[in-house]
Image 1 (spheres, one colour):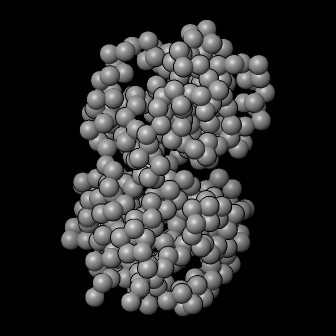
Image 2: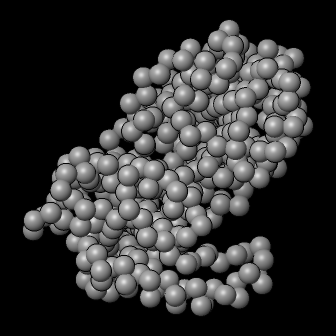
Length: 364
């Protein structure tokens, strides 16, 4: 009998790409498995999941808006509506299991599945678990985590340390530096810095690059700059005519960017870190300061303690980030040290471990 599995969640690349990696691993281990995704309407998953070849259903759901309370007026209505949508989707598809990967849409789907006695699994990517995952963890069959010490959030007997799934095009990346550089039309003789704020962009990082944009050319450094949508127009305007800078709101083929990069500037979400450990590059982390429980700073500090990365706080990015990039670009020894230590943290088979466990638990 082929099994049916729902994968619920999304909102950012940090939830979507691992979810797709898990789906691919399930299909590889049990090709007859039917997989359906459930996401939030208007979010990135509605575009990325079909591109990866999977069906997705969207919920009318929104998270609590901390910055504008007036926007929360419709929230109870949206929640009720999304629970009705979840009921319809789950009852029609009749899954054997539901895997939650985080993001708004995972909570109502797992909550309903648990009420119906359907096997649920959680993947918690951060070293600091979110409230809804902690709540769902009590009734989940297994909770897959990235690091040790998660017993303070979940029942110890349910935890399985798997690491975080990294998309296969990055794990299996065989693109050479020259091919990566050529992809962006840059010069292989120059040090190349990849600046990325994740799938949605990063204001603090973008502003820091903007203010010091001339410094890169002066120091013979070139830039691959992913801005996110809201900063793209401004970035295009300021780099016009600068041959050493490539910029766009999103990089679809991230494997080329990682191949081209000598140094990376990045946020420190759990998934970004998992990918950067696999690509083995010197990284300067600029944690997103408003992440729940400031977990991005915790994530980055973990690596700094192991000499596996450098960190600049978002509030200091404008004054310190570009100077630190230029210093690092000139310090070959420090680059080697960072690469050596970050490489040791790479996990390349998390998706297989998760798929294997899910299939094992629902086999009988």
